[in-house]
Amino acid sequence: MKVLVAGASGLVGRAAAEAFAARPEWDVVGVSRRAPDLGPGIESEALDLTDAGACRAVAAGHPDVTHLVYAATYEAPGLAGGWFDDDVIDLNAAMLRNLVEALEEHAPGLEHVSLLHGTKAYGLHTGLPVTPAMVPLRERLPRIEHRNFYFVQEEYLRSRPAGRGLTVFRPTVVYGEATGNNMNPLLPLVVYAALLRERGEPLHRPWAADRVPLLVEAVDAGLVGEALVWAATAPAARGETFNLTNGDVFTWEGLWPALADELGMVAGEHRPVSFAGDVRGRGAEWAALVDRHGLAAPRDLDAFVGANSFVYTDIVVPGRGVPALPALNSTIKVRQAGFAACLDTEDMVRRSIRGLRQARMIPGKESA
Image (tube, rainbow, N blue to C red):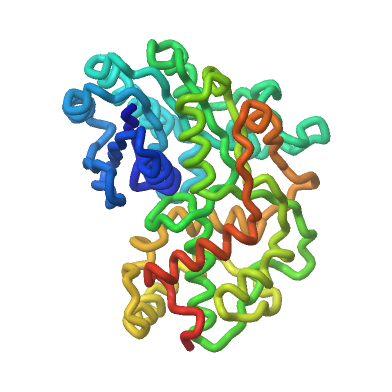
């Protein structure tokens, strides 16, 4: 079997390519606009999905592809505004169309497509209030109609031959070690912590002291990768849509001491900050920190974190507007279908930080 992973330089795409490559029965090719730097056993190619001719050329070079993981997205600068922009929606639809039609033409053995979407499918980003009837969010809930490239992509795929083996995943907020991405909250958090530590300060809580704690969820990029491997050959995954989370819930107040401990710090006081404004604006301090500690991380904060990840972290962590009810996701459906992997979120955070330290992306725990 051979899987093509689109968006392989991204948070989920990289994890998916690595998860497939860990199985000897799979050949893996990863494509993305910037040539992905992937591990051994993974063939990597640069591919601009907006270029239909380039998609046909890549597909012609891989006529033995049997599976597609589509984890590519275009996000506009500033992130949230693009979620409602018709041009962004149309561009994401065209990117998928270019690749799928090229594979249908040149890879006749294509039998399964996994499509990566998310919980915006439930319309929460539109300002829709969460009602008791919506908790937990279930895949069978009536669709809240709104312009969303998720729906455009899904409807297109279900109309195509490739869509006969379609699985749609809706992971909650994804965390991982991939750099330079649009929606990875982990990297803004570790940058924020490293800058505070460099100043000799504790890890201050970046939200107001009177904020009501809210139950939230996370999902590890590696766990999403494992789910994609499972779905590729599981009959119970065909034609289905699944939520994905780690399987637990947490509050930022509860997680903060563990995050501080893993970074060699202590939890500090409440000091509301904007990651997109305050933290991203400290690029000169970050560059000096990289030089001082001899890190392998880029000196440019946007190159390391991704400008949109700062924006996303302002949505995910400080909580600009806390809803009355938590938007928790049911994962009963995917577990009943046969994928039961789970992960403690505190363990995920600690493991990811250790991975970043080992790769010399952030200072060592003992560094001062």
